[in-house]
Image (cartoon, rainbow, N blue to C red; front, side):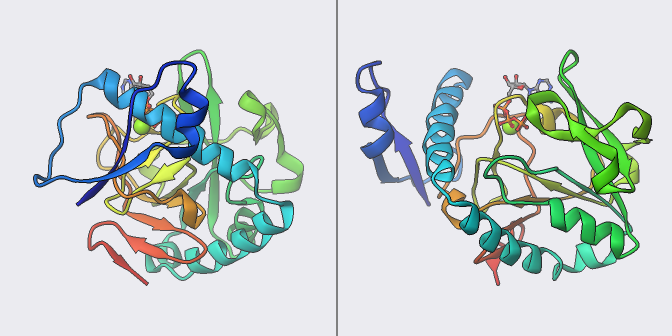
Length: 234
Ligand SMILES: Nc1ncnc2c1ncn2[C@@H]1O[C@H](COP(=O)(O)OP(=O)(O)OP(=O)(O)O)[C@@H](O)[C@H]1O
Ligand SMILES: [Mg+2]
């Protein structure tokens, strides 16, 4: 198995490091034990690298790739079968979900979106019935349900959850924005079928993961649909 190993830099070397110090090494065991500080350090370097790359996407690229992601997502059996699906509301250059959510609602499924409670570092779940009418810019600049349209749902109500992220690996490892929001939401078991959406360049060989990191069941990019359990791509 291969791992992207990122060397610890001095502050001055940091910029240079972001561009060039990815060393491909081979490990012989399945488990690599790192302390939490090392893991956080490596996570942050990867976050910066991927974010920088993603920021460079043009609006046209975001639109086209997201269209392909949406097509693949709606081909997944678990998505076809689900009647209640939670989906992040995309912002900036994230794989775009606005049209996906509208299509979910139009197809007769129940759609739910996250509502961030910054004080408690928690995600609340709210049913969304009208994408254009019910959302307004909320925490972190992300669209969220306006007060009068908050319709709380429990995690147990959700059959499929579609999650954002900065980097993913094919074992289901996910690197988010560093708030731990989704890990906290999904620590309750059993939890929904978890799908991550990303562009192909956001897939890395093996992410440094913490004990509390919740793994995904499926990752969809514009080129691949990865079943993280079977580790098959189609
Ligand atoms: N289940 C949990 N209970 C308590 N704290 C948690 C839990 N999961 C994560 N955290 C805390 O959240 C912080 C950020 O976690 P992590 O770096 O994995 O974020 P992330 O998965 O990238 O973020 P996000 O899910 O918001 O996109 C960690 O410092 C960790 O201590
Ligand atoms: Mg995490």
